[in-house]
Image (cartoon, rainbow, N blue to C red; front, side):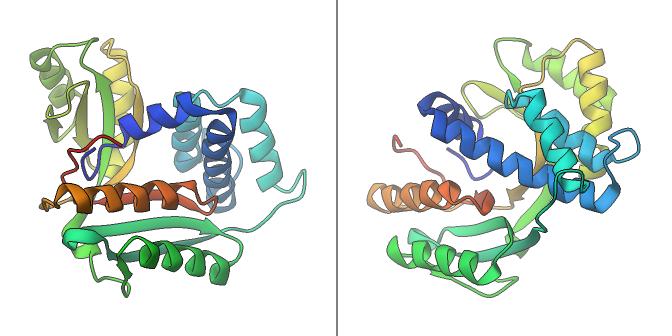
Length: 244
C-alpha cells in the first residue's frame, strides 16, 4: 500500500459490501456534480466530465446512476452545491497526508477530519504544510497479467506518457501530465492496452518508513478518512508493509 497506489484498497472496498460499493458511487457522484457545474453536462465539450464518467465506468458504476448524477447537477432533478476542500497533516511516524473532500458543510467536514487525525495519533496542519512534498500527476493503472513491462513502456512512450512504475506486484502505473491523461489513456486503449483505472493523483517526492505499530495506526486513519462521505481521496507518503 504505497503512498499513491490505491488499487488494492479500491479492490478490497469493491469486494467487501454493498455499502462500501455505494460509498464509492456516492463519491463519484459528487465528482460528476462538480464537473457538470464547472463545464456543463455534455462530456463531448467538458473534458473533466468525460474523465469522471470514465472513472465511474472503471468502478462499475451503473449507467443509470451516472445519468442521474449528471441530470441532478444540471438542475433537472434539483441539486446540491459541493465545495472542494483540501486538508493536510501528519500521521504517526512523520507520515504526510493530504485529504481531498467535496462538501456541502465545511464545518462538519473539517471537524470530522480533525477528529480522525487526533484519534489515530496524527495532527491536522495548515494549508501547504505537506503539499509541497507531492506532485500532481495522471496515473493510469494496468494489470501485469495483460501486458509485459517492455511492451507497456513502448506503448506508453508512444502514447505521450512520462514514466512507468512497476514496483507493485499486480499492476503497472503509467504516469502522465494531468492535462494529457485522457489522451494518453485513449492512445493506450487504441494500442490494445486494457486500463484498470485512470485518474489524477498526488505522487510523493519521498517516502517515510514507519514502524509496524505506527503503520497500523496510519492504515486505520486512512481507512476511516476514506469512509467519510465527504472525503474523495487520501494521499500519503508512507511505505506500508503490514497487512491491512
